[in-house]
Image (cartoon, rainbow, N blue to C red):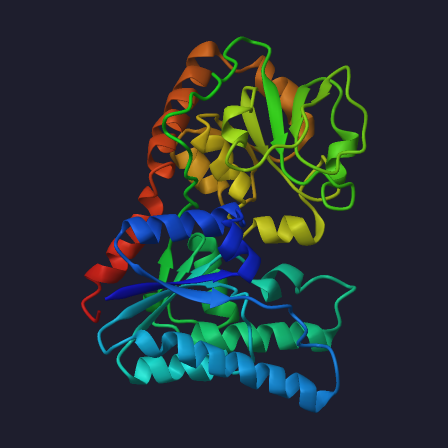
Length: 362
């Protein structure tokens, strides 16, 4: 039997509160595939509070809880877990090791790698970085299979974390489920091309948004925007992830991050080199082609599928749009719509599951 771990707070379970879109989508795909759910109620993360004995006891209690919830598994079963887990404990790897000894396979679907993302941040101590690495690595090493974002992440994890290539599976891109019965707005196809920017628009997170080129139209969607709206910048407000695909208006969705419009520099730029930003899936699920940083890991997918354009700087956009023909844009638009058909039904997740099920050692 195949199982999947569902981690929510008690309130989220009782009130059916929507969680993070990518995690919710994975659970929906797994459930539709016939997997059985294992509930894991997430409590307050107070692991760092109190003295050493109190901290240790909290980790021990979380270990006991994991063992209790996984007691339903039998030899030959497979358990799918979203990583990083919310119910984290330093003893989780020992719980998973016991499952594997009992001939239960453990599959991790990676959302984020805290160590990879924060390794170059100056405000995080070396001790904290090493702890992140040890906590993540202990679980990743134990897993039977690890579904990673893309081939770039796979290569980095092999070289930096020494994970076996054989047990890592390239997802390619995150799926993005949407209501098939609702009609999406049509991407703008005239020569006045514009860029959509969707996501957290907080100045600390998306500094580049506050110095955008003035010769291109930008359509902004998301919380925490404190800039002006007018001229070439139009702020449309914030919408829930499930509703956003039906609100977006523009020619291209922009996948960019960091402090500069010149390049995706710093910590966020480095992470884009291995990460699959969920907003890429949002745009494509909405049937909208993508503008992406040329060094981003997903640039390879976008260019291969002819579903957008890779650039090195946002200063290039004016010339890119000026030289873009209606015919070229129509091709990208059509390809984005074709990818949308796959993303919105969980195609890429199911392909990863198929590879796991087809593995000769499974």
